[in-house]
Structure formats: C-alpha cells, structure tokens
Image 1 (cartoon, rainbow, N blue to C red):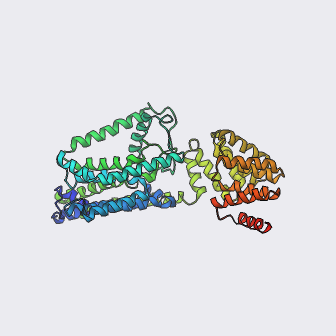
Image 2: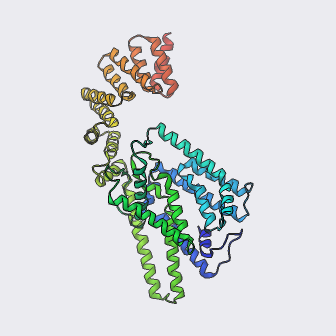
Image 3: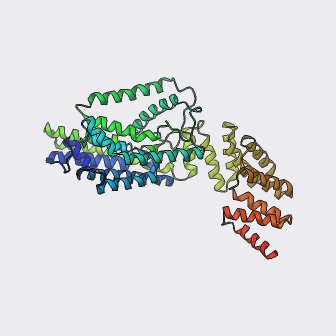
Length: 488
C-alpha cells in the first residue's frame, strides 16, 4: 500500500526501483497509506467478513489477493518475464486466493489496471498486448475457477435462470448496487446481513433508471479526466471490476447485495479518501496555513470520523451475537421481504430446544410463502418433536406435493408410521425416500430397523451395510449389524 502511494505521488513509470521522493512526498504517501489502512480496518461494512465465521474465506482470499498484488510489484521491479520467480509466486498466491474464495477472479484485470496506472507499463496498444498476454496464465486460472463455481452453484440449485430474472433486470440491479455500495462506504448506516432481491415493478422506476445514468456519468467523467488525472479512472475501474463477480449478472441465491462483497472493492474509495487527506495536508503546507489551530481542527475531525466508525462497527458486531439476534435484526429491518429470516429464526429456536417459538416462525414463513418446501418440512419436524404426529403428517404431505423428491419428508413419515406400529406403511415410505435420494443414509438405517423387527434379517443386514457405507459413524446400526452377525 505504501509502494502504491509512492507511485501515486511520482506519477512516473515504474522502472525497477523505488522512485526518489522528497520529504513532502514521503509525508503524502504515509498519509495515504495510514488513512486507507485505518478505514479498511475500522469500517462497519467489513464486520460481516470478520464476525461471521463462515466468511473467514473472505479474509483468506483478501490476504492472498493482496499478497499476489504486492508480489506483482516485485515482479515488475525485477524486469518481468514469465520465468521470473516473482511471477511464479504470483501464480501460486493467486491460486490460493481462488481456492479461498472465487471472488478473486478479478485479479488479472486488477493487475492490468496497475500496469496502466500507477506502473505506467501500458502506454500504447503494443504495450497493452504484451501486458495482456503476460496475464494469460492468470486468466486461465480465473476461467477454470469461474466455470467450476457456476457448475457448483447450479448443482446446488442456487443459480437463478435468465427466464426467472432477465438480463436487463440484472443490469439495472447491478447499477443500483454499485451506487448503494458507494453510499454505504460514505455513510455506513442501516447495514443489513441480508438485502432482499427487489420485488417486481422496479425495472422502470426512477430510482433504478437514475442509477444507470449516474454510473454512466461517473464512467464518462473518469474517461474525460484521464489525460489530467488517471487516479480516478484507475480507482473506479478497480471498484467496478472487483465487484463485477457479485453484482448479480450471474445471480446466485436470493440476495441483491451483501456487505461482505465490499471487503476488497472498498480499497479503491479508501485510497481516494487517503489521497484527499494528503491533498488537504499538502495545500495547507503550500499556503503556509498549517497553524496550531488548523492542526487542532484537522486532528479533531479525523478523530471524530474514526470514533464514529468505531462506534458503528461495535454496534454492527452485536448484530452477529447469535442466530436469534441476527435474524431478529433482519426481520426488524425487512419485516415483509425476507421469509428466509423467519425460517432461519425458526431453525435457531428449534436448535435451542424451543419448538413452540420455532412453530410460530415456520407458520409465518408459510403465510408469506405457501409453497416454501423447507418451511413445511421443518414445521413437520417440529410438530413431530412436540408429539403431534397428525399435524406433522399434514405438513410432510404438503411438502411432498410441492416437491415429490423430498426424501427427508418421506423418511420422517416412515418414522411416524413405524412408531405407530404400521411397519408396512413405514417400509413403503422408507423405500420411496431411498429411491428419491439413494445417498441419504437415514432411511437405510430406519428401514433396516423395521426389517429387523419384522424378522427379515437378511434384508435388515443389507440395509445396515448400505447405510454404513454412506455414513460409517452410526453406532446403533453398527451394533445391530453385529447382533445379526452373531445370530448367523
């Protein structure tokens, strides 16, 4: 970060050695680096990436991403070349970044931006072509990661089709998200762990059309200013390109935005803020107005901003205290548009052995989304826990009607009929569960128990063996299998 700050100051081609800096320039790049680092470390937008344990991949990805960028500066300073040890290290670190989180796919484009400014390695079409070809191994890794990610999300059912969300709608939402993230960087209030996808009717609203106009306006302004000031164009390009994988052009899941997506992209605006602070400091020096009163005022403003960010960050950390706090907060902010929040709050209450409260949450989800298969299934499980088999059966049958391949519902129906001394009915549902999802171990174990109770020892043995191949840690099944072996 300090090296980039130096280069921003000199605006000279990077020829393999650190440029000579005056004391004033050294002060400038220290200010840029310090402000950028403080904003990056204290900003509330970054709470989600740090407080949510599942997002430790965000921190790993950012670490390897930035290490790759730092190593690339050494590669440039050493003269380049694909056999250069620094280039090989860039490839290795980039691979680790991609393995941490696929969002790192933007690194090759980011390095091209650095080649253009501040490294000034790109000054003509010929130099651009050389820099582009130099990044082909990195681009190949990005392409492989992107393809694997798309296939994985598609297999998990998270990928939204273009029939469900047209490309034109995605572009509008992407433009709106670009500006919303910028606004949240400047004024980080009303941050939500889950931003719902907008309901229908937004496509031609003034808010979204204005967002497109503003994005094009910022881009045009950067292009217009490029001959006088490359910094703005470089920062805007970095911001857009690093956000591009998560802007919803390839839509995954039901959220429109996420605070965690700004973890790396926010570095661009933070560098601009640092540059602005350095510019103000420089102007005061030039105008010889760096008096005691001026120093006091600047220090007061800086401390106020840092304390305000710290307070907002601490407040946001408490949102992630536990599942109840998190999803209650989301429901408070979005009481109508996020059925997922009620469903997850129900899951939390169920895990905390509070089934009555869980029932309330699942019923709320079903009122909002009558065709929510997961809510019907979870409500059935909760009724089963409350020893209300009739209500549980009702919910399982609804879930099966909505999703005929719902193996969990079939398995749980089998458990209910087995406990009610209806083994034939139980066998029927267990077999259907196995047919729906052969790799699901529980119905194999349960079917084995029913067969064992019915005296069909060989059938029971077969199901136990099959189930243990899928899940070898079921002690009860292993014990029954041992009992069968002794009988034989």
